[in-house]
Length: 156
Image (cartoon, rainbow, N blue to C red; front, side, top):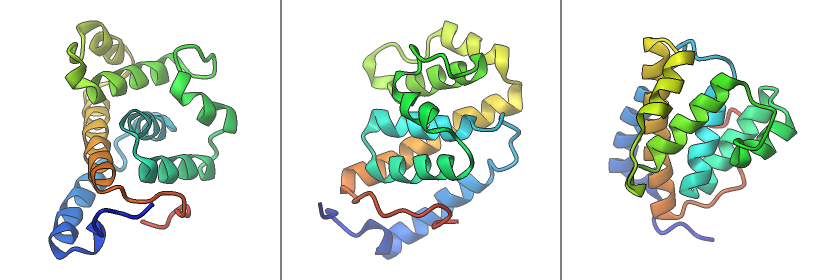
């Protein structure tokens, strides 16, 4: 597969990427429970069909100690017994926030469940992570950026 355009070598894209990457860095240290950001990044990327992000975030999660079973079960998290209630709430919010066009938006029960597990700063970090990964997914999926060659830590 070839990319439609070499998005990341384009000067305008590089300028945009600098700013979107800075937005991502602002979330570091947001005190989300360990592992939840990776689960969010993986689930949104699965929904959006973004191979580049799936490649990166599954490899990074494994590199950080995530188990193969949990990685394999992210797509079927509702039926899986390997996730905590907080992780399940984060995954539900991720799905709702990623599938906005499906008509339901983010239902109150999904938000209320997330609210049970996360304080305001954590909710802001969670919502921001969902928004950010959806932007990255769209850039890569639209341009058909090839996936499979990422090495953990490659992009910072």
